[in-house]
Length: 322
Image (cartoon, rainbow, N blue to C red):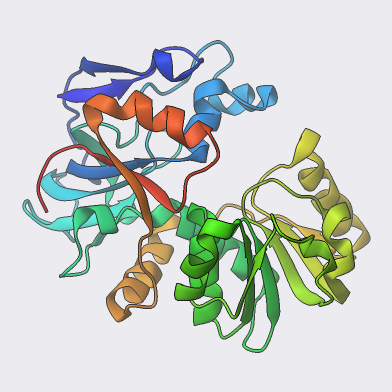
C-alpha cells in the first residue's frame, strides 16, 4: 500500500510517499480502507518534535511511528476474530491511537473501540472532524460548560475553534468568537452570538467579562486575557503555550484550588465518537473544510498547515470516492 512515511524529524520535505506492507488486523482490530484523513497542527508538531521535550513522548532520536494522521473516514476492509460491531464494506470514521501508525495511508488498523459508523448521508471528507472536536469537547467537559454560561473562544476559525463554537452552542452557552476579518461571517454561521475581529480591535478590551475564555490556537495567554474573566471565571487552553506556561499555570491552579487556568486531560475516544455522530446526524455540527490535497501532495498540505492560517480542517484524499 502507499503511505506518507516519516523516518526522521524535520520539515515537510522529510514526508515521503512510499510502498509499505498493508497491516493485518489483530483479533480486536478493524482494517480500514482509508478514503480521507487530515493534516493538522498536532501532526506538524510531531513532525518537527516541537517543543523539543515532546521527543520523550514521540521518540528521542526519530519518531516512534512512521505514519502520522489521527483521524480517518473510509470503509471496513477486514475485521479481527473478536470484533462484533463491523463488517467489510461498512462506512466508518474515527481516530487512531496516538502511539500507533496513523491514517495517512491507504489502509490503517485500529481497535474496534475507536471506530464508529458514519452518518448515512455524510461524505468521507465531512467525517474527518474527530480530532478538533475531541479536544474542544474535552475542554468543555473540563470547565463543565452549562446553559447560560458566557464563553469567549480565541482562535475560533481553526479545527478546534470551529468545533468549540458549535459544541458550546449545543451546550446552550452564549458564545463570543475571536477571529480575523475574513472569518467573521463563518463563525456567525456556526452559531456565535458575537464575532470580534482581533485585527481591528483589542479583544481583551471589549468591555465584557466571561465565565470562560478558551485559547483554541495557542496564540494568547492567561495574563493577556485575565481582565476578561469574571471573579470565578477560568482560562482554558488547548496548547502548552509559550515555554509551557499553560501547563505550569494549570498545575499551580490545581494545587492552589483556584481553578483559574485549566487544561483538559486525555479522554477515551470511543464514548466521544457516538456523541459526535449524533451531532453530525442532527446538523448541530459540520465540517469546515479549508483545502483538500491528494495523498501524493501531502507534503504541500504540511507546508500549508505550518503557516498557521488554515481554517477548519485540511483534508487528504487517500482513495477517491464518497
